[in-house]
Length: 520
Image (cartoon, rainbow, N blue to C red; front, side):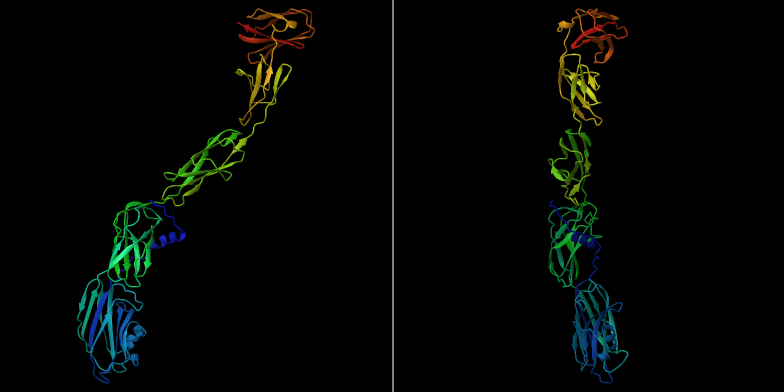
């Protein structure tokens, strides 16, 4: 179905045409009336004469005959009713004799408009001398409608042989043409064409297009467009916005002068309710860390079968024509929107703009680690997790870490916004007992149950520290000994749980570690 765009002026017309008048019958036809006048007395047979038409309630319609230009003041009643109006009348001087006067009337008023059907009066007045307040007069009432009327009123003193005939014309035959298309939206403009195949259309006529109900009935038609004049033309008709949806609508054309009802368009029309498109968007996360991918989702309402999406960041177009949009480059404060263009043919306005999403993007601080003596330190006070090439070191979450093996170490820091930074790498090498001849020691028994002995095999020249680490590198015991030429000590480790520990010996620049195992 073709899309129809409405302009404000057409919408106004749609509203107005709904409340247009329902056509009042205005049958065209011909009235013929004849009367024979007679009089006696002063100045007779000279006389002045007028014949005119009024409504049943006494409103003047039209003068059809007026004789007596110089003495029309003697036609007192006619002057009161007509004000002297002789439009479309036969006029002349004072008559010198009596005779039969005949008029013909086509049912129009002084403006050429076909008058509504109803009861009318043919009035006649005659005078042959000045006889105020009025001369002899008489009237005949008939009904102007779609039926033939023949009347022969009773003779009066001055008006004889009256004959009245009203012969209605056959109404014009109006044929409404087929409508282009069969499905329309409320508010749509529909060009309605029609033809007049027979009959007379008067110049002051109005052609009106009418819409049936959803069942095709014109019992209470709705006027949806009109043109003035006697010549058929296209009527640009507008479906009112309050029209209920349905599939059995029809359109017809009627005329006003004369009143005639045309055929309908011949096929059922479907009218659909107008819809208002809208769109809302959501995000996988509105608060992210720099470089994190976030996906936005669009939810359209009345988008039609093939809606179009245009995503924007800070008003600039981005992304594909898709109900989703993803990005890893958003910055703090970026505003995301989506513009929907609906394909629904009944969309009142096809474009709709979504709600706005303001992004909060956190940038984590850079993290560095450094080595001081045998300890690695992180620049981040909290959030550390230490790693080596083998992966995460369980329990190593402080701002420093004492390596227990030769490896490459680094820290991954999670800040308070859950943003992650990875530090630089540091390679740390531990000199084992086998590699350091300067401080060869013997540790026994290993495994042990409660105590362990440490024997230095050669002289040392610095104080000695003995540290016991748990599997996570935490120091559980710390002992210090003054340097001596030989050293044997017993370490009481009965309070340790069973497991694997690291015994660390430090003397000056010599750094040694020994894995020890407690059985119970």
